[in-house]
Image (cartoon, rainbow, N blue to C red; front, side, top):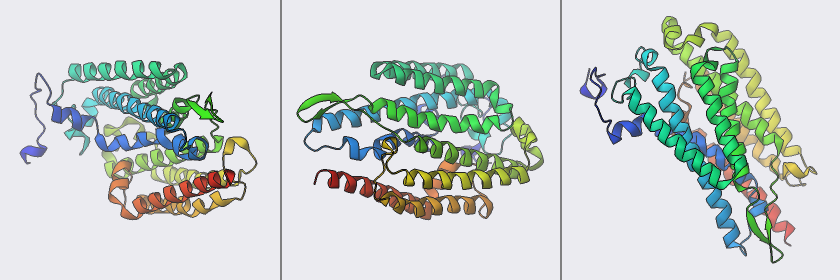
Length: 335
């Protein structure tokens, strides 16, 4: 085994910056991008070139919420890996994580996570109390997951999905009531987010969580239970059926969202033009199922996004199409 992949038995007194960064799982920070989803899907509400101050304030608050979630989610990784250190050392890949490999001691890991949590909660408080409550809820749920819920079948993946929904909720709360100019007057932004977007986020996250469990079970084989206790409660037929159900529900929910014309909270054009984004969502779901079942991927969803070029291109076109539809609607309003 090369020195690069060697698991040491000696824990350094002070962990290196390199190991701290690796333990923070930079690739997984991508999932925190969900915090910006409300900003994207309400661009036709807050975009106003004549109010640069208001727009910059909205974008700044959204980015601040993103930074807070990066801190809190990273702290959760440190805590979760500290709890799972013994089991991670039996996993073919997780055993190389700095905490499992004893490159970061558990006291140091908990100290770093405490610092991140303090900074995150303090920053959330400075933005708004509702945001603080949302961040604290995310933290509390994940603490419960690390010590207890991760060993309860089905509830484990549902809790993982709830973390994604809370990211979207936090993004909405962060920019809501931002002071903007309207008809020359300073007024708070009255943000409306479609409940369908929260439903789609929950179902999409549940699909990813189930796919992750499937690949963990498939890759671990007979040793999977020793690597993650809950895998002993699942089997491949059950997970395949659940994945099919959730994938179908995700596509139906997104389609219903695009049909929600005449509903203020939906914030979609009355001319049904948001339906142009449905093919991209359908392809994205089918592509993900292909990667799960044919390419046997899914254990590391963030790597799929970085490595699968068709999926990356599809997401880009979905974003471009969705933003174009919303901005076109805005231009029609101002004609």
